[in-house]
Image 1 (cartoon, rainbow, N blue to C red):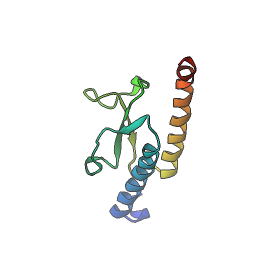
Image 2: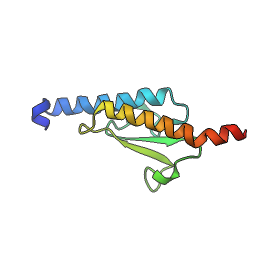
Image 3: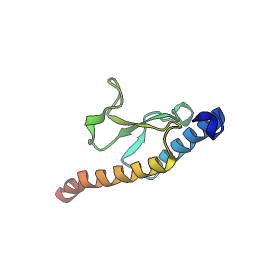
Image 4: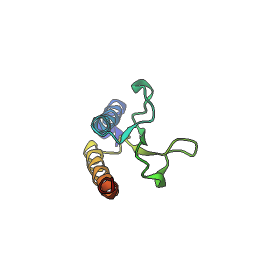
Amino acid sequence: MAKSIGGLYALIARADANAATLAGWVEKTPACDFLAKTPATRSNTSVTLVEKEGAGFDFNAYRDSPPGLRIWCRATVEAADIAVLTQWIDWAYAEATAGLVAAD
């Protein structure tokens, strides 16, 4: 696959595009943030987000990490699929918190 799409630099560009798609979503989503606060220390392939709202403990990022979600953004993934995933997360979050908002 790598040679057919342009080699190493094309793979890096795909991973960067995937991470950028996810970063754009995180920027407008108050319930999530990057585990790595400094952009220079963030992975562009295995991106870890930290939940802030007390939901989603079924998918811990790592054993010793705070609750979070790790999203695979390597070159084998399409940026469009990352965008669809973020839409699903938005929907799932809205569904999960709908009762909480109504109870307040």
